[in-house]
Length: 248
Image 1 (cartoon, rainbow, N blue to C red):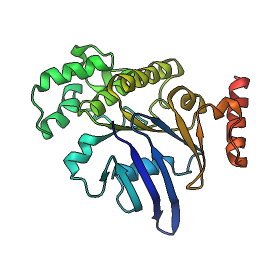
Image 2: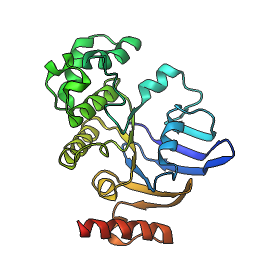
Image 3: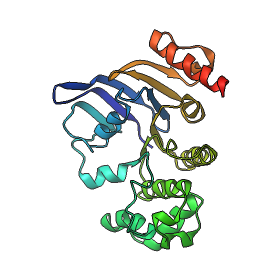
Image 4: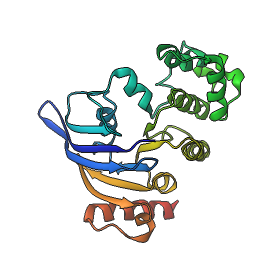
């Protein structure tokens, strides 16, 4: 497990400033959430920190290493991402075996068959599903495959970009509990984007509330139900979420 340090992260797309000097730290082994309305910059932070976007200013460190200076292979071994849409992130013409084996092959892992089987067991899927294709799996099963693909390289850090928002409510809890179990067993550091404060309450130790590309406030999980927010926007967002939960 490794800590994450983000210092004065900024990015613009054309004339539009999307992130404004965002800074926060994630402790090794912690699950840290990013919460806010659509367009607040949450997913952009993940894309910058993972170098899927490289036109940003500032510093991102994983452990003692600047992500800009890490060799690509080392960075991919250290940080993996689970995307929001499991179907969109899996090639429809590639079997699950091919999807999982690609990273092992590129990185020169030995005992690839044993690693494939273990990855499937880790996410609660039958090993025989390796020979299926994405369209033959349910949404929850596809997201489990996406999680298996991320963890098969044995990373220290997982970026989770709304990993359950595309799933049925009945499946969301299963996937969240899977992520909690994997973190406890393997010691991952999680950086998680979510719209849903109930998900943050279930998963995260701390979370940052974002608005218009800035961090408004960093709070402990207890602040969701304990009224710990001090900034007006943070209070408003938490109150609105709690009111919605009570309404349903």
